[in-house]
Each structure stands twice: as C-alpha cells, then as structure tokens.
Length: 51
Image 1 (cartoon, one colour):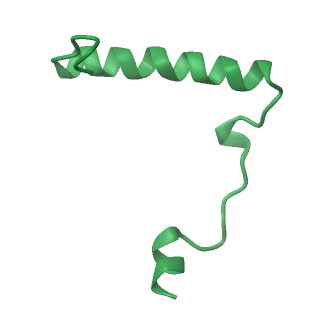
Image 2: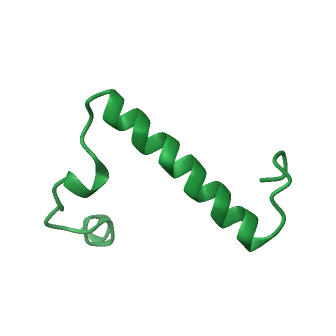
C-alpha cells in the first residue's frame, strides 16, 4: 500500500477490489476452482488447533 500511495480506506478498498478482480481472472484462465466453489471443511482451524 505504501508503494502505491494507498493512504485512505477508500483507496485501500479500490486497490483490494482491483487486485481481487485480477486474481479471479487468473484463476478462471488457469482452469482453477473459484473460491466460492471450494468445499467447506468439517472443522475450523480453531478446532483443529485445539485438538
């Protein structure tokens, strides 16, 4: 964020959205599974760590 001059929450949100769009396009082009299509684990990280 420093390198890009992102110094306000609005700029940070815009940067986050832009990068997210680029990443999603890369996943699609590579034929990968989109995050919303991934299965949900039965146990959370917190549960696994406590075990």
